[in-house]
Structures are given as C-alpha cells and as structure tokens.
Image (cartoon, rainbow, N blue to C red; front, side, top):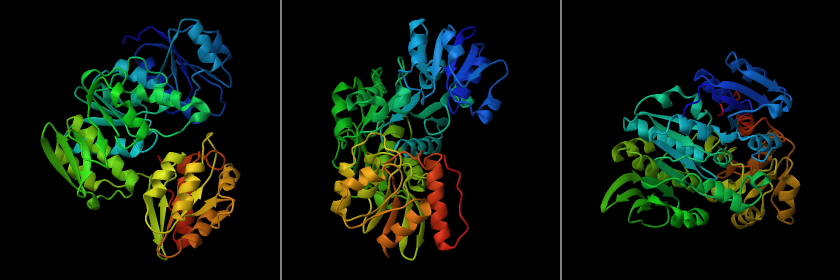
Length: 456
C-alpha cells in the first residue's frame, strides 16, 4: 500500500496509536493524532516530530478531511468521530489492517476469547526453535506496525488479534488463522454474541486455497464455524482423535496429517498446567506445524515453555497451600477453564468490573466443585447474589485481605486461585497490576520480599 503523501488520522494514543503514527510519518504520510484523554505525557514523548497532535477532545479532528483513519482498539467502532469521518469518504481501518497492507506476507494470526497470549507466545517459541525467523506481536503487547522486523524478508508474523482489532479489517488474509474458543466477552461493547462471533470469523473470512484455519473442535461455537471455512481446515481436540489435526491420545500429543503421524510427547512432561493450558498447547502445535515448524522442534519448545505472567502462573506454595495467579482471567469462560482444570480444594478470588456478563455458569461450577469464594470489586454483589445460601463465601476490600481469607478457605493441600472473571479497572491499573498485587500479598504472607514482576 502506498501511503506517501496521504493524510492520515490516528485515533487514540497508546500501545498501537503511537507506533502507527510514527510508522506512517516515516513512510511519508501527513499524520494527525487525536485522543479525548488529557493525561498522555509519556506517550506524547514517543511521537515523532512533525505529527499534529490533539488531546482532550476530537474537535479539530472532526473538522479535518483525511484519506484514512487508523483506529486504536480501545476506541468504539461506532464513535461519533469515526462516523463523521466515514461520511467524508475516509477509509476507517484498524492497526492490524494497516500492518497487513504494509506487509502482506506470511501471517500466523490467533484469536479466541481465552488463551490467546499463551498460545501466541508458544507458537513463537516453536517457530524460533525450528529456525524460522518470526516476530511475536499484536494484542500480546507490542503493535505489529511498531516491529521493524516485519519488513525483513522471510520473517513470519505471529500475531495475537482481539475482536476489537478485527472490527477494522477488510482485506486481512493470514496464511494461518486460529480460533481457540468463543465464549461471551466484551458484550458491553459488541452487544450480542452474534456480533462477537461475526467479528471472530473475520480472521479466516478472506482465506482461500492452501491457507490454513485451525479450529477447536471441543468448543461448541468454534466447531460450528468449520462449515464456513473456505481454505484447508486443520483442527485440534483434547477429547477425540482426528484424521487430520492435533489431538491427545493415550496421554500424548499427536499431530496427524494425510496418514502420517508425529508424537510430540507426553502431556505429563509439560511445565504448563491445567486443562486450559493443554488446549493452548495443542492449538499451538497445530498452528506452528501449519506455519512450517518441525515436529521435533515443536516438541522441544513445548516442554521447555513455562506459564506467562498472570496466566495460570504458579506463584508459591506456603504451608501446603498453592497460590496461582490467573489475573488475565477477565471473563467467565476463562475462569471456568481455570477453576475446572484444578484438582483438590480450591478457593477462588472473583470480582472486579463487570462486562455485562452472565455469572450463573460460574456459580454453578463453584457449587459443583465445592470451591470457596472470596469476592472483591464492583461485581461482588452481582456474583454474591447467585451464591446466596452457599456456605463458603467471603468478601474482601483489598487484595491482601482476599488472599488471607482464600488461604484459610483452601487449607493445607488446597489452592488459592486468582481468576476474577472481570476487568480490573475498578480497583487496579490493569490486570497486570492486579496480578502483581496478588503476588505481593502472597510473598508478604510468606514473609518474603514482594516480587513486583514485569507484567505484560
């Protein structure tokens, strides 16, 4: 795509806005940036010279005329500014669509409600172990357009992609796509499950021929999409054998394609724990294999890989109680997987900012497994109402209190699980801050120095 001389508006300063603006400016575009927020000192310092900047409102941007508008994921797709710019004839796209138009080479694109970051990082490790040059980027934390490596020959792009980013794609066609699972999330923005699923479909919508789509055959909504795929399907499953695909059989992970099979190795040797991570691992095998990774390299990378921060991350064991940080569990589906994948007595810390979710499946699993519950944050009352009469429920006004109460509930041999099923913004800066506060509370309980961690 030729961008030199084009007038481009970037909406939103931050993780994708700044790299998008700087990349376009470096390629000769006339770039303006607008953000309704006012506190962006650190981000503003990162903008290249010559970029027009408006903060605190969109008034100047609303009056301008642009060839293209690049939208940060946090900006609602139906915002008045975007509507007005569409009315002027401007093309409105996401940073992912921009990156694809700049570099349409081999993409391995991964989406789903849960498990995206772990799977994406693991695929990247498998590709590197195979000697394939690749860059891991996207919703995992670093904007695709901000990575200089994507412009190098033969480099593959391993990208985590969210539903917010898929709102703004139109020509996006990855070489390998993957939908890990689909459960209700972000309905405060997407309104209906139909709309949410429709956005996830965009990851494979343009794929054809020998492109590959990886789907979870154990996930009801993802499996339904198989009939819509117009390229080669390479599914995965934990529950059943597949003629072509990746699956667990006899405690081993197996890749099968056109009558040939590869035994990746025993599940018990994985450093990742829990059913959710087993699904992530099997998905990563399918994606990396489809992207050209060698089966032996896939095996080596898988069994060396450890949990990412805040994603079913083992923190410590104190007095026979295990502590697991799954602060990235920001929706009901994610917490269901985390809680359902642990053995023994579990005390789970739930709550935070609600995203218009139905918590009843979570309440049902809590009662079925006999888990203890400590409630925090704005959603505590809503979740608590579903657990009315259930004996093992407590409330806490902060993380230290929550960890202490959960530890007493779990008891020796049990597990304290932070998997809140909610956003963090009512009490914490973000999910990483929440996870770090959990770690600190656990370390304080052990009498050790608090570990701050790097977060994400």
